[in-house]
Image (cartoon, rainbow, N blue to C red; front, side, top):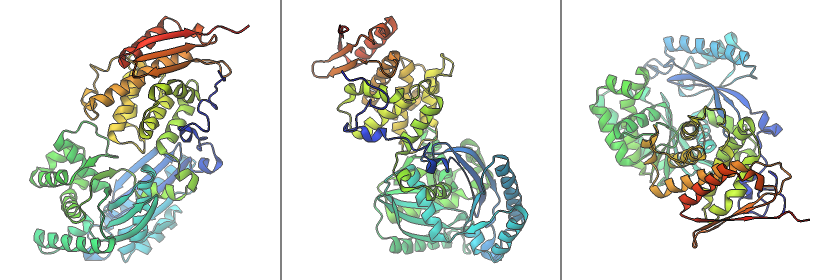
Length: 522
C-alpha cells in the first residue's frame, strides 16, 4: 500500500481532487486582501466594514453602522439632511481614526443615491476630504447595482438570477449569470423617497406599480432566483422568521416564497410596529421604513414572479472586496477556502483533514458532488474547536457550523454540517438546545450526518506520522459489511476506545465489522 501524506491523500486524478487545490489565503495576491476596510455612505446609514481572514470567504473583523438618514427630505429640499450630514461627518471621522488604529491602508469609501442626487453632495465630499483625508467615490446607480451583484457572487459562486438592492433613496436591479453581472438598472424606489410621495397610499401604490413595469421592460423576464440585498429587506426577513417561528436566525441564504412575502407584508401592515421591532431586534429608524419596503417587495415579487427568493447578507461592501480579487481567487469555493483557513489557524494538526477525508471516503463513495463538498468541509473543521471544554465541545461545533459567517451554504447544509461535527464528539444528538433545528433536514440527512460524524470520530483516533503506512476502510453497502485493514504502523493505535468508536460507526451503518491486521514484512 502506498504511503499517504496530507499532500497525497487524494490523488490528482481522484474525482475530489478539485476540492483539495492549494489554498490561496497565503498567496501574495490574497494576502493583500487579508484585511481590507470599506465604507458605504448610503442614504439611510453610513457603515464601516473591515474584512479579515481567508480572502475568498472573509470574516468581519469590524462592523459598525450609524443611522444618519442623509437622504431624508431630499426629494423636497434637494439637499442632504443637515442633521444627517453632521452625523455622517462625525462617523467618518471616527472610522478614519479606527482604521489608523487597526493599521489599515487607506479606507475605500463609496457614496450612493443621497450624495449623488443632492445639490450639496460635492460640498459634503469636500468637507469629508478636508477633515478626514478620506476621498469619497460617488457612484451612479448602475455601478451601485453592479457592485451589489458582485457581493452576491462573493457568497454564491456561479449564482444566477436577479439581484435587488434597496437603499434609503434608491433600488437597483442587476442580472447575474455564469459568474458575471449583466443588465442593470436603478430606480427611486427607496423608502425615504416613497415617504415623500404626495397623494397618500393610493398614489404611492400606483407609482410603485408603474415603476415596476418600467423596470420589467428594461430587465426582461427574470424567472430565476431573486436575491434580496439591503437593510430593509433583511428587516423584512427577520419579521418573516418571527411570523413563521423559523428556528435558525441566520439571514444569509434565508429563503422565502411569494406566499411568505404576501403574508408577511400583511402581518407588518396589521402589527403594532413598536412591539414587532422589539420582538425582532430591529432599530426604530429601520422599522419606520419597513412598511414602505414591504409594499415595494410585494409588487416586485408580483411583477417578476421569481421561482424562489433568497436573502443575501453580502452586498455593495462585499462587492467592493470582490472587485479587488484576481479571477483565480473568485473561482474558488468560499466554503472550502474558509474551512482550510480555519484548519490552518486552529487545528492541532493542520493538514490532517485531507488525510481524514481520504480515510473515510470509501463509506461515501456514492455521494453526490454537493454532498462530498460538505464531507470535505466537515473533515477540515473536525478539530478546530478542540480548545472548547469537553462537556460543551459537541454543541460548540454545532453552533459554530450553523451560525458562522460562511458563504456558499444553504441553511439545510449548515444543519447537516453542524450535526456531523456534533457527532464527531458525541454519539448522541438528543437533549441538546439545538433540537428545534434538526427539523430543517429530513431524517435521511440526519442519519447521513451521524454516520459522517462517527466516521470522523473514529478516524481522528488514528493520528500518525506523515510517513507512516496507513490502513484502509472498505464499505460494502449491499452486504452491510464494513472492513478495516490495519497496517503494522496502525495496530498500536487501535485500542479499546478506537474499537468502541468503530463499532458505534458500524451500528449507525447497520453493518457487521471485519478487521484484518497486516503483518510486517521481513
